Image (tube, rainbow, N blue to C red; front, top):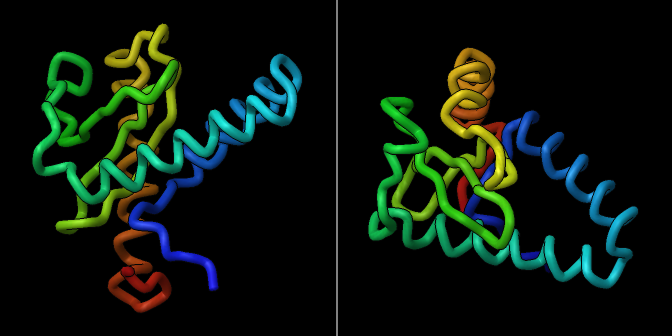
Length: 128
C-alpha cells in the first residue's frame, strides 16, 4: 500500500516539476534524475512535518504568507495548512528572481490554493 504524502501540489507546482524532470532527464539521465526527485519528495515530507520550526524567509516571500525551503538547486515554495500538511505552490530554481516571480504569480497561486482548500473541505481530498 503506498504511503500517503503530507503535501499537496498545485497545478503550477506539478507543471514546475514536469519541466524540471524533462530538463533533468535530458541533461543528467534517469539515475541522477530519480535521485534528485527522491530528494525533493523527502524534503517536502520533512517540511510538512517540521514547517513550524523552519526559518522564515520573508526576504524572498515578502508578505505573501508563503514559506520557502531550499532543496539542492531548487526552492520548494509552500503554504502550511495544518500541523503536518503543506501545499506546495511552486518549485523554482534558486538562481531565479523569486520575489518577482511570486509577485507575478500571486493571483494564480491564490486561485490554486483556494481550489485545493475547497476540495479538502468538500471531502474530495482526504488529509493523511
